[in-house]
Image (cartoon, rainbow, N blue to C red):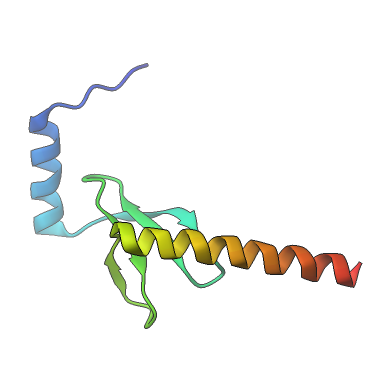
Length: 84
Protein backbone atom coordinates (compact mmCIF):
# COMPACT_ATOMS: atom_id res chain seq x y z
CA UNK A 1 0.00 0.00 0.00
CA UNK A 2 1.41 3.37 -1.01
CA UNK A 3 1.37 6.20 1.53
CA UNK A 4 0.77 9.72 0.32
CA UNK A 5 1.79 12.64 2.50
CA UNK A 6 0.48 16.11 1.91
CA UNK A 7 1.75 19.44 3.20
CA UNK A 8 -1.04 19.33 5.76
CA UNK A 9 0.34 16.11 7.21
CA UNK A 10 3.87 17.44 7.53
CA UNK A 11 2.69 20.71 9.08
CA UNK A 12 0.54 18.81 11.57
CA UNK A 13 3.44 16.49 12.41
CA UNK A 14 5.80 19.43 12.88
CA UNK A 15 3.20 21.10 15.10
CA UNK A 16 2.87 17.96 17.22
CA UNK A 17 6.66 17.68 17.52
CA UNK A 18 6.77 21.31 18.61
CA UNK A 19 4.30 20.66 21.41
CA UNK A 20 5.08 17.11 22.56
CA UNK A 21 8.69 16.78 21.42
CA UNK A 22 10.27 14.57 18.80
CA UNK A 23 10.05 10.79 18.73
CA UNK A 24 13.49 9.72 17.51
CA UNK A 25 14.34 6.28 16.17
CA UNK A 26 17.85 5.08 15.33
CA UNK A 27 18.34 5.38 11.58
CA UNK A 28 22.04 4.50 11.39
CA UNK A 29 24.57 3.08 13.83
CA UNK A 30 27.91 4.76 13.08
CA UNK A 31 29.98 3.28 15.92
CA UNK A 32 29.24 1.67 19.24
CA UNK A 33 28.66 5.10 20.83
CA UNK A 34 27.64 7.33 17.93
CA UNK A 35 24.28 6.94 16.20
CA UNK A 36 22.13 8.92 13.80
CA UNK A 37 18.48 9.42 14.69
CA UNK A 38 15.42 10.45 12.69
CA UNK A 39 12.08 11.71 14.03
CA UNK A 40 9.33 9.36 12.89
CA UNK A 41 6.86 12.24 12.56
CA UNK A 42 8.69 15.21 11.01
CA UNK A 43 11.77 13.43 9.57
CA UNK A 44 14.22 15.72 11.44
CA UNK A 45 17.69 14.12 11.61
CA UNK A 46 20.08 14.42 14.55
CA UNK A 47 23.27 12.73 15.67
CA UNK A 48 25.25 12.40 18.87
CA UNK A 49 28.15 14.82 19.20
CA UNK A 50 31.46 14.51 21.07
CA UNK A 51 29.89 15.12 24.48
CA UNK A 52 27.01 12.69 23.85
CA UNK A 53 24.32 15.32 23.27
CA UNK A 54 21.99 15.31 20.28
CA UNK A 55 22.84 17.86 17.61
CA UNK A 56 21.42 18.62 14.18
CA UNK A 57 22.78 16.43 11.38
CA UNK A 58 24.48 18.85 9.01
CA UNK A 59 26.25 17.75 5.81
CA UNK A 60 29.58 18.31 7.58
CA UNK A 61 28.62 16.06 10.50
CA UNK A 62 27.20 13.47 8.09
CA UNK A 63 30.54 13.38 6.26
CA UNK A 64 32.37 13.02 9.58
CA UNK A 65 30.06 10.17 10.59
CA UNK A 66 30.59 8.38 7.26
CA UNK A 67 34.38 8.63 7.63
CA UNK A 68 34.21 7.52 11.25
CA UNK A 69 32.01 4.56 10.32
CA UNK A 70 34.46 3.52 7.59
CA UNK A 71 37.41 3.66 10.01
CA UNK A 72 35.44 1.85 12.74
CA UNK A 73 34.47 -0.99 10.37
CA UNK A 74 38.02 -1.25 9.04
CA UNK A 75 39.46 -1.48 12.57
CA UNK A 76 37.01 -4.13 13.71
CA UNK A 77 37.42 -6.15 10.54
CA UNK A 78 41.20 -6.45 11.16
CA UNK A 79 40.74 -7.13 14.88
CA UNK A 80 38.47 -10.12 14.24
CA UNK A 81 40.87 -11.53 11.64
CA UNK A 82 43.85 -11.35 14.05
CA UNK A 83 41.98 -13.11 16.86
CA UNK A 84 40.72 -16.00 14.72
